[in-house]
Image 1 (tube, rainbow, N blue to C red):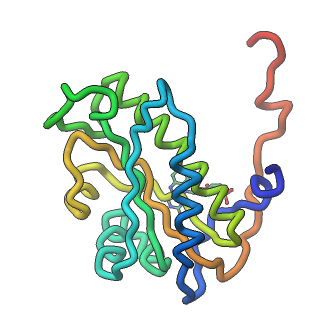
Image 2 (image 1 turned 45 degrees about the vertical axis):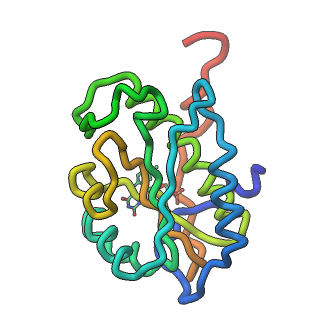
Image 3 (image 1 turned 90 degrees about the vertical axis):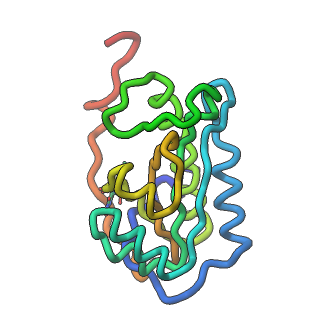
Length: 179
Ligand SMILES: Cc1cc2nc3c(=O)[nH]c(=O)nc-3n(C[C@H](O)[C@H](O)[C@H](O)COP(=O)(O)O)c2cc1C
């Protein structure tokens, strides 16, 4: 496992080569099996291969047009309805201060991490893209307003393996027994 974790990089350049459906299914399976609070599994995944849709998503993701060069883009969506049917029709966005929104975003982020690691394990590359607003991206994909887009994830065969980014040392981030 640590090999995939160490090898994974944010990949932003892709070969003009499709992703096999069998690999895509393994990637989605990795997301499906992620842990979540109370096993609520508050996630949905939109798989996009259509060039026009990829272009629109890339434009909505802060005009990062390179995203549309990936053969497939997965959009991870967290669903308030997984917590309570009472949220039906509610509008949530970046300003919403409700604990259940934090819970569904937390859980969906775990599933996105599973996706990134399985992508690497399959010899593919991906990048978690988060530079969008709910009001900007939801209409592009017809996503109802009680759902919160967590990540746009372009996936494909890497054109190159990017250099590793630095990380803080364990000494900087780990404490023992108490703060
Ligand atoms: C929540 C989140 C949002 C991100 N948004 C973007 C983005 O919009 N565009 C982009 O190119 N990279 C984005 N990244 C990728 C980070 O820049 C990258 O993970 C970080 O620099 C570490 O590099 P590495 O993934 O290669 O280890 C995002 C990563 C995360 C976790």
